[in-house]
Image 1 (cartoon, one colour):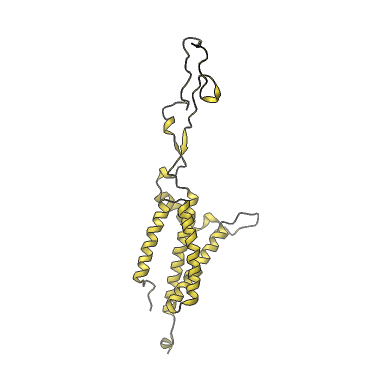
Image 2 (spheres, rainbow, N blue to C red):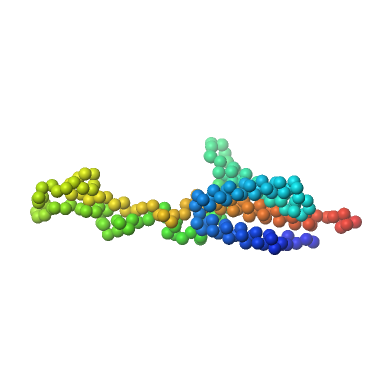
Length: 216
């Protein structure tokens, strides 16, 4: 009986490279990684279809499984991401019900530190500033706060005299990892992983099929 756990050295090296690239893409998920992966993955499925045509034997079986599982997963994700309508939906195909989406959510909390999951961070310039105003009312003194030397220069807040400039309490986090981008990268990686799994399954079925010698 053929074993489904037979891997060539080339396949093992490809798996190690896939894990390394996938971990790097997820750890620093950004639009560049997303564009690169979704540019390569459809081409990989297209190449698999060509290899189905021109290869024979176990290689052909592997690429049949690869193309079939890859195309099937891509179709499922596209249906799950399709804009909602009033028509009833098949709940298991809802985007957040996909097990790959839920695993990607879990990976986001484990791979990305909490400080990189916050889109806004406290503004260092506003720390210790109390109300978020800098400058304050200059030139005020004594009961009734009479102005010394006139109204003073116009500065800062809306052109009002004596008011400092407003400092925002938060700023955009330069290290923020967006969950949506993380999801899109994750689905590209899931597509390749499930396609490879389908290829190995098809290859095992091909090796385990009854041959003429076995039947006799």
